[in-house]
Every structure is written in structure tokens, then in C-alpha cells.
Image (cartoon, rainbow, N blue to C red):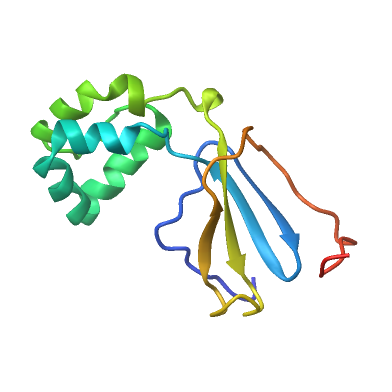
Length: 144
């Protein structure tokens, strides 16, 4: 290992893949269920805002939504109030992983799109779920 680069705020999820193109790394991960955040905002209000402001709560909530499950190691640290209002959004937020689609993130390895190491979501929701995509080392480093 020559270097380790933390990807703060990025999660691998249940289905992930990567591809290299034009000096950038593209990461395919499961997109969050589209109605989840609006449901949490409408149902949980201030409790949801407080959870997002607390790193432990925010990470535990993200884990439970990604796993589509509440368990001790993933969602178990949520407050009773947050768990209660999350229950009202279960059908919306806990979409089975196999029913989810992928989103795409670009990690700028060479600084061609701004700061080296920038991580930007480039596609919010593909029409499919991408699992295990990769590319050959002989893929050109630039557009053809």
C-alpha cells in the first residue's frame, strides 16, 4: 500500500463497483431510497435535524438505511424518538437492497477536475443496480 485516502462521508453500501477512466476513479454504490429523506424530514422534523448534527446518530442512521435493517450494530444507537419516527418511514427508507439502483461518484485522482482527491456525485440514480463493474488496465486514459 503506497497511500490510503479517506473518503469522508462515502459509504461502500451493499453493492459497490469501480471503474477507471480519464485519470479518475468512478465509484458505483447503492443510491439512498428516493423518498427516504423527504419522509424523515416530514415525519421526524427536529429529531431528524438533531440526528444529522450528531456524528454518531448520523452514521448509525445511514448504516440502518443502507442495510435496510435496525440492529444493535447498525441503528442501535439511535434515540428512542428517532427510532419511533423512523418506524413511520420504514417502507420508504428500508427498501430491500436488491431493489435499489446505483449512484455514481467521481474521485479525481489527477486534479483534472479541480482539487486532487475531490469526491463528487455525478449521477444520482442510474436505471440499474451496478455490482462489481471494473475496467481492464488497457482502457485508454482519455476520451477516444
